[in-house]
Amino acid sequence: MAKLNVNLSSDPTLEAMDQQILKKKEAEKQRNYLGASQIGNSCYRKLFYSFRGAEKILFNETCDETELDMEINRVKAAEDGHYQELAIIKNLRTIPGIEIFNDDGTVDENGNPNQIGFQMLLGHFRGHVDGVITGILQSPGTPHVLEIKCRLEKFINKLEKLIAEHGEKNALREWEEEYYAQAQIYMHEMKLTRHYLVASTPGGRRQISVRTEYNRKEAEAIIEKAKSIIFDNWILPERISDKREFYKCKWCEYQEICHDGAFPLVNCKTCRYSEPVQGGQRECGFNKEIIPEETLHVGCKYHVYNPALIQAKLIEHLEEGCLYRIESKNINFANVFLTGIPPLDKKIDAMYTSIELREKIKTVDNINPQISDNVKAAFAGTECEDTKAEKKMWTDGMSKKIDPRLKGI
Image (cartoon, rainbow, N blue to C red; front, side):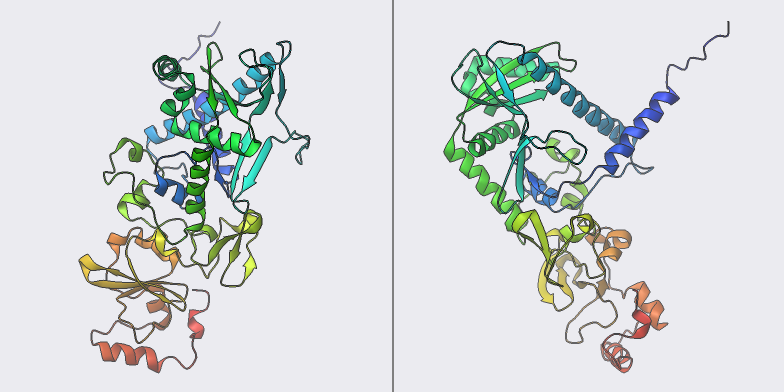
């Protein structure tokens, strides 16, 4: 019998499986709304970036092993949580007198039951409940919102301790801010007064429950928070910490944008012309049309960054872009969708399209006085040191507003 070739340090089959997990994760359809499951996050700025699609992690050669392992574990944990949800609902239904309603009676395009869901704030704030349960033995006559979470043993132990210290009604708030906010929003929208959360260890070998009461004042405050994240489009919230090594910032996917001045993804959600409108949709203020959902994460040639996403001082909204100032460098730069003819009445040291800022310049700190390379190539000219000569160079060449050589740039 041939001996098995065992390599204890790696298994190519399992490594290939992990790569498929990452590919599946990257291919997932991005959420175009603010979720009730995330609104309890204590960092308003993270929620602001998330709602606007400022970044999406792509797992490639630039990611280190730690980042890859963490994301793989997150995906596996989410899958385990889904399995535990199905198992716990199945087992709860075996108890006489208990009923669980966990779909709205409709099916999706694949024939799968749709979860009970809700939406508010013009459809830009949404949530889906795990179910509504009636007949639980602690309070048989009161319907509860049902939520199921899968957490590691240490978190289950922590919840058990908090129930003993603060009482069951207050334990969820002390345990997880996001879970508590989610519970309040779900009760508010389902018009119920009780929430029943079942927390399970991976594999479902141990469970603990906690019941929470509805608090109308807190639920309405959470909705106001969601409203500010969605509709205060030009106001960037403060950082939760100015230290990038703070534990809530260290592994945040928006760390480079938030702390290092990196430029966000170029898409319709990060564009200054994009506004949330009725039905969970976005309207393009440039062409006055509703943006198709399938193109929201793509953008177009007229993209100009929402000034709230640029970490420089906004000086002025130009006709075709925005003008910024970097005080530490004494530089004015413009983010425009046309880089051919600068406004001659403005002092502009550098001009870039959004794609150039994202892909070439990378961060605000890398901006220096210069004319965009593709503009110089189109005119085959050189930069003039004398300001008047520079203006004359541009003026002499502009028989039309846009030079033909700039088409496609």
